[in-house]
Amino acid sequence: MLKINRKVEYALMALKFMAPKEKGDLTSAREICEAFHVPFDTTAKVLQIMNTNGLLNSVKGIRGGYHLEKSLDEITYMELARIIEGKDASQFCQNSKGELCELHSSCNISDPLEQLNKKLNTYLEGLTLSELLFENEPQTTELRMEV
Image (cartoon, rainbow, N blue to C red):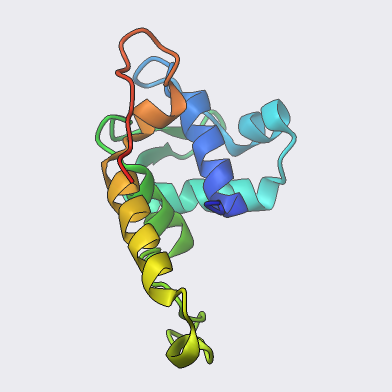
């Protein structure tokens, strides 16, 4: 099963919360935290990361906040995950330092798992956040994944 990091979850929650708002309507980190009971520091950091990477735009000041800079149709799940996690999710059988797992040379499932990873990554590279977050909306088409 695909593991989704908490920061990516918070980013998805924030983006889904912000998407229906009118252009120029701002959302604060506090507003998101109150709506979903998530920690302020982590949520604020995630919003800053998305701002720095051009997904959001921030407005400073007492009535400041964030608004979507890019449409959710233009952002894929994999793009968001890479931005938030700060690493390439396509690395497989490697630790955080980029070193191969100590069992890699004798592992009998590394090749099949590598193939699974490639197929999942291909799917996630094409999955827009609009499709992911609003799949039950009438304008969204049904997704099919070939394995």
